Length: 371
Ligand SMILES: Cc1cn([C@H]2C[C@H](O)[C@@H](COP(=O)(O)OP(=O)(O)O[C@H]3O[C@@H](C)[C@H](O)[C@@H](O)[C@H]3O)O2)c(=O)[nH]c1=O
Image (cartoon, rainbow, N blue to C red; front, top):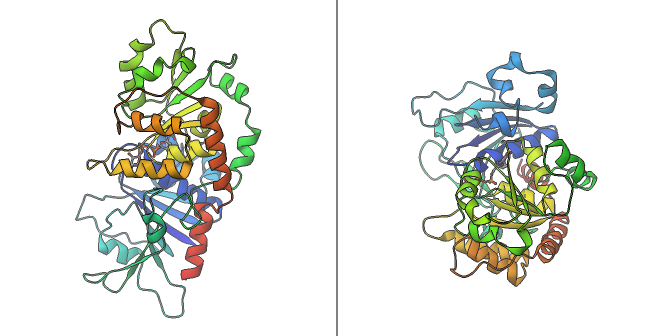
């Protein structure tokens, strides 16, 4: 089948990160995808070569073409109201990610009314990830358009989630086999990172957690190797680093890496301090201790979202308390890091997730059912 996926980058990298993973998961299962985004630039490091297809086909190397077969990245002139709808063959499935607004003329162009007798074209909204109860209620609901140029059409809600009654999480079929075969020492060595010794490796991929200086002084981390992602995490650690004075801790600034390499970074770490949406999911698959820096919302809606996640995670009291302080929900001393208990919790959660179908399997099933 042919897919159009629309991605409006609001901020940071998760909007595009999720959409790229979705596109590549679909392509790996034989689907043909056009990925439209208003801000394709981060793909240059997240998925090197991805932009070749649409922007510079002649420059694509054979390796790029092979790795990215089935995906065409296209620029979406989202904020230009005069941009004419594309004159391209219609797609079977149109996905607007995270409820992004697509001009009705574009919807109509890419999804002409289905011909009687032919399979129905589908228009889906892939929503944000949450463990809150509404997700199970809203997953797979139809949203009929009542007025305007698209009146009479239906958009379907598809919600990712952590339980069998949701759309599940993105997970490539071979991911766990790769995870098991991963050789941490060799990988760290290849990256030029310290591969010897028992000192914990901590991946830092966060926003600006106010309690970072306090965490630097946690006794479990006083000789830690901090593996620091570029951008906001690097800036946050730079400010906090004076708190590590006198400790043996070391920091290692990392470059932007491609998504598969980012996964391996999480596999190689004893503690993953992740954020947003996609890195949280990848930290669950990594099966190491994790702490989530949730994307903050103005009305504090993220507090409930965080609690729902901690409930689903069956987080032990120390991990719950740590999350609440780390995310500024409560003002209290940061509880001590307990790598053993926290990893056990993540591994148990991963076992539960592995019993469920991944998001793309469910999405393909949903589309087959509706067509
Ligand atoms: C640091 C790094 C990240 N990445 C990728 C992994 C992820 O796909 C992506 C980061 O995305 P996230 O973890 O989701 O965090 P994020 O905070 O970057 O993204 C988002 O969070 C969402 C909840 C919001 O809705 C978005 O608007 C957005 O802010 O960047 C790499 O591929 N290589 C790297 O070197």
